Image 1 (cartoon, rainbow over the protein chains, first blue to last red):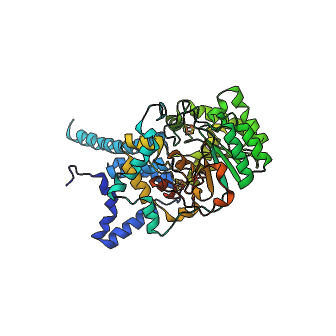
Image 2 (cartoon, rainbow over the protein chains, first blue to last red; image 1 turned 90 degrees about the vertical axis):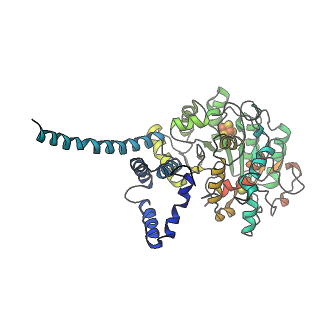
Image 3 (cartoon, rainbow over the protein chains, first blue to last red; image 1 turned 120 degrees about the vertical axis):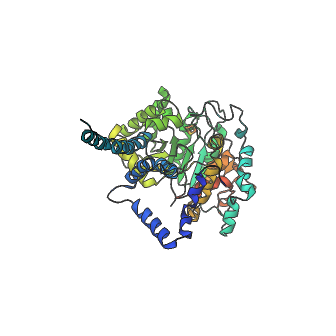
Amino acid sequence: MSETYYDPKDLKNFKKITDWSEPLGTRFFEYYSKVFEEGALSAREKSLIALAVSHVVKCPYCIDAYTKDGLQRGITEEEMMEAVHAGAAIESGATLVHAVQMMNKHKKLSH
Amino acid sequence: MAKSSLQRSKHLLADPKQQLQVLSSGPFSSGALPTFSDRLKGLNVELKTDKLEILQVNLGYMCNQTCAHCHVDAGPDRKEIMSSDTIDQVIDAIGRFRPNTLDLTGGAPEMNPEFQRLIRAAVSLSVKDIIVRSNLTILESNNDYKNYPQFFKENGVHVVSSLPHYSMRTTDRQRGEGVFSKSITALKRLNELGYGREKHLKLDLVYNPSGAFLPGSEKELEADFKRKLKADFDIDFNELFCITNLPISRFLEYLMATENYEEYMETLVEAFNPSTLYGLMCRNTLSVGYDGSLYDCDFNQMLQIPILGDKRYLADLESSAYSNRKINVHQHCYGCTAGSGSSCQGSIS
Ligand code: SF4
Ligand code: SF4
């Protein structure tokens, strides 16, 4: 038993999810690799998007994987950090925009 | 950047035997990872030399820089340098072997006082491609070296230069404070002379990862380097060679000190690509040490793994003895066979 919920070594076993559901797992991995191919967006741009989303969904496996991917692609530290800020800005914006709901409710209930 | 060479700081890993000891133990002695020879045996492959095309000569381990990942453990404190007599043997061997390429490396090869004589001799022996692996900053270090780009041009020398990244921060962290700006100045001067712009004046750059990861796609990195260096500094170059860091010398020390060694070796072993075996540089290269000793490649030279056979010095080797010689491999060879492969000319496949 690992002592923490997350074990970095588990990332290597990700593919094993197909053991319990072959068709769904296989389709997921096919879809995943297709998504990250060079397309209308470059593979480099997609790697930065993935890095930002990894932070927003707070997945330690994805953060490790896309930091390494970024290094291999020669993506700079500044670019990586700006991508994370873009994700963080959307995340905090999404929280703050709910303040309008709070203000509306407040207005309705008080005078 | 490293503060000093491993040798100067009397580090255990300054000794090649200790490095080989590390590369033979851990996951390789426990059987968790296969040794490189076992991997070849499993494929029924025996690595042998083909035809000699490249004579790679290490003119000495002295260097004006002390880069963090240097596989030579070079630095200003290293005194090993090729003597005039050994240079004569190299010139003699060029006549005997008639290689297409003479590849001069170091340390900083320019620091050998016989450097220009050797190049002139190679020109008169009509060697097609004379490569100088220049760290660029040496060309900016004093007035004598500042004339070297002109000398390169007059002799049609092919310049291959290290630049780990187009960002100052990454380059300076690996190679030392101020290295990026000096390298940019040197590249601009080479461009002004026509290097990287005129067809016969080739200027290639070498990229190696600044840490414990493999290089990405050579094609994509080359496109990024070209775009950024042109936009930021109006610099042109021909090709970008991506070289994987091999787990030896100062890079091995870095892997151990940062506890990245096992994971890096696992990455290399997992990325083993059999199709690279046919393009390995040791199949058409002969590496000559500063003292005239012979190796399958510059990495084996640093690990002091000699060529197999009884002729271990350049002066003794007949040209006919080159081909069909078994290559002396060890675990560091996984660095040449990972992913798209790695050689002094960049990716293999
Ligand atoms: S310039 Fe080259 S030889 Fe000199 S220390 Fe750096 S990597 Fe080593
Ligand atoms: S390190 Fe690379 S070039 Fe040298 S012998 Fe091994 S495979 Fe060949």
